[in-house]
Image (cartoon, rainbow, N blue to C red; front, side):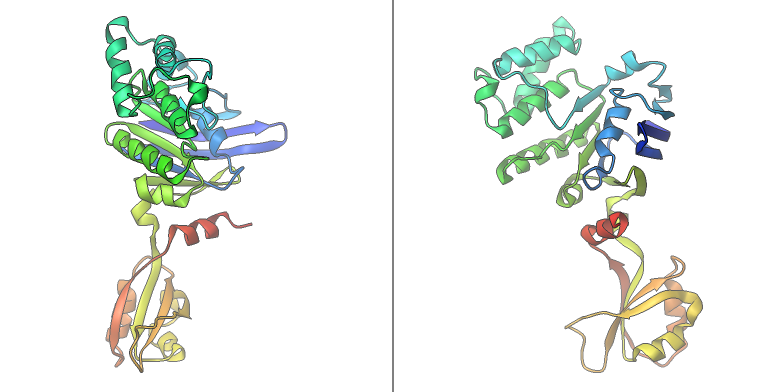
Length: 305
């Protein structure tokens, strides 16, 4: 398990990461989401040991990276946004080189390289110069080098940035397959990417964590969509102020004549209170359900201003 406690990083007077704490469990893909400049890359560089924190602690399986960085780094695979590739090398030369600097034992080296060639589908490109590859294949080569030592935790910073749709699809499929076996942290500002491949999401804005949740649970907050046969004024009277923060009309073209839809924001996460209140009235409830918000609307709300 990765555990981050009260992590802060300052650059002169600028606070890039501001007292954040979170835990990431094994065997999941966690998305690190935020607008440009939010602190995502700095956070990744801190948890991989490439930067030292101003304050706070980082633990891998209860071992502090400050005390045991060499051992811990052998368990990490980190792919920064600007992948460190050598255009004058052949793909096979690069994989051999990465296996050596990652400390892959001689008896495992050939097997590890072959496995990465298959996983990243590089079979037809191993004798090509890296400088002659498309951006999508360069990213595959960089990913193969990141995984060559079979790391337990994989950390990827904007791995699909600048790729075309077909290349993005391939890299995302690779990430999904890796996430079935590894602990994987994915930094991105692409909302669709988080929804498509992540189990959990941490949203960062201005160096602070503003959300930390399972992706599926983040969509459902303390809002109820209600359709019944009364106007807004009567509904507010029936529910009483103690049960809701706000009630707003909701545009719903499928509502039959005489019925109206409303979006209710609850004071407590107890939608059953709405049902209890309405059961005491004479109104006919056609539909009542938890309102699922889009990740886009959630992101905009949490990162505005």
